[in-house]
Each structure stands twice: as structure tokens, then as C-alpha cells.
Length: 362
Image 1: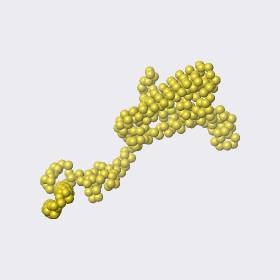
Image 2: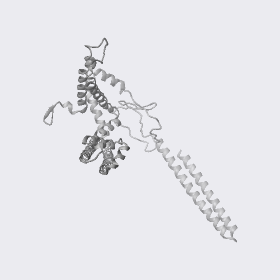
Image 3: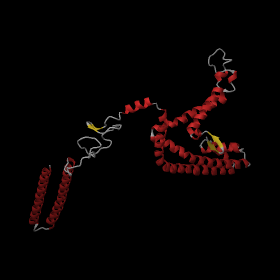
């Protein structure tokens, strides 16, 4: 038992799912007590399961149909608990539950505005039927907020300037201010809560699992454990057998591409008592060799690109000097061609030397 406002109540009612189940049970009891078929048994008129008789006319609408509606709502609300099978959906449900207080604050503020302005308009001397009393005024302003108020009624209010000004004030406060404030509240609350709700969803899933474990029979648990095949070694790749005690989940090769194998493999036994072998290669394995070859090729390519760019600049400079000099054009042009040929010879020598280095590395 727990004490709520000096009243002792069962502790299971502190959980909203259990409270909902209790209310659902009460609705089903009321439905059974007001079932029209049971009341029509004495005078069924020769029909089996006849719900239409004079004895059921007073209970068919209330309480039977009303509590049937409440029972259906509770059935589907209690199905929200199935969201624990997906952590993302469960986190979203928890976020919605945490943001309900923000919605409650908006409704309280809106109710205060509706009550204030409808009471003020009911005291005003006017001929508008929508604001004759507080009840009709609240209903009319609520329809304005939901964009259900007709245009003809707005036009009729132009005959009452005071009523029209109060309505405009309400639309500014309710539609412009309070609704946008609600959007800002929900946005800030969602950003602040969703990060934590993913962890809470996982914790809730764990709690449900631990609560359900005592009800699982040893036979079913053994069958479930054997179906997982935890004693079977898991394959990293085809033919590459790994360790036991895991559940293998396959994925597409294009999902997480890797160009470097990060798994170090050693031959021998997998007994945990055996000392882990040390690497004696000291960087001479195949991966390091390929990496050095790639670095060397990249270095040679950079040198070639630099030499080509420098030769092109010198060629442009030689062309400009030959066009500016009229008398010594032949001599300068010959020197420019000789420089270009020398650069090309240097490029070919660098390429041949790089190729020889790559062959030696291989």
C-alpha cells in the first residue's frame, strides 16, 4: 500500500498501465451488468441473443454504449506498451508522455483566456447570440480557435464594434501568441528530452524483460537458449571462424566498407590460458609492404606533377622572350628547345628510376 493525499491505495496503482487495466476491468463489469441481451432474456420474442426489447431501451445508450466506448479506448491505449519492441518508437512514446505537461500548461492558459473574455462579453449589452452567456461564449471562441467559426458570424459582429474588438483581442492572444508559444515549448522540450529518452527506453525494455523472466518456465528458457546456438562459433567471413557466445547478424558489404583489415590473426590454439603470441615481423607483413608501395607511388606521382608544372612555366617564359626580340629570335628559341628537351629527359629519368624502385620493393 502507498499513501496518496492521506489515502492508502494499492502500490500497483502507481503504474499507469496497471491503473488502466483496473479501469478497463470496471468498464467490462459495467458492460456485463448492462448487457441488453441479458435484460432481454425473459422477453426475447423467440429470438436467441435478442438485444431489442422494452427492458433494454433505457440502458442501451447509457451506460452500455458509453462504457463500451471507454473500454475500446483503454484497449488501444494499453497497446502502447508494445512499443518496447523498438527502442526508437519507445523513445518517441516516452517523449510524448514527458511533453504532455507542456500541453497541459497551454490548455490551462487558453481556458483562463476563454473564461475571462466570455464572462466579460456576457456582461456586455449586445445582440450577438454567441455570447449570451458564459457557456455559449466559450464554445464560440473555441470554434474560432479551431477555424470552425463561420464567416457570416464574423460579418454580423461588425454591427457590434466592442464585441468585434474583444474577438480580435482573443484571436491575437489565442492564435498568434499561445499557439506559437506552444510550438516553442514543444520544440525546446523535445530537444532537451529526446537525448535522454533513448536511454530510458532501453532501461524500460530491460525492466520489462526482468519482470517477465520469473514467469518463463525452465523448459521454454532452455529451448530458447538452445535456439540461439551460443556454443557455435561465429564466422567473421566465409571460412573465417571466430569465437563462440555471440549472435551473428549479416549485413551488406557496401554498408560499412573497409579498405584495411583491422583484425589481426594468429595461428595456434584459442585456449585463454595460452600466452598471446608476439609480433615478430616488425612491420614486414603484407599490409605494411602494400602501404609502403602506395606511399612510394604517391611520392613519385607528386614529383612528376611538380616537374611537369615547372617545365610548362619555363616553356612559356622562353616563348615570351623569343617574341619580344627580333634579332636574336633563332638563338633564344634554340636555347628554349634545348631546355625543354633537357626537362623531358629529366622527367623520363625520374619515371624510370621510380619504376625501378617499385620493382625492387616488390
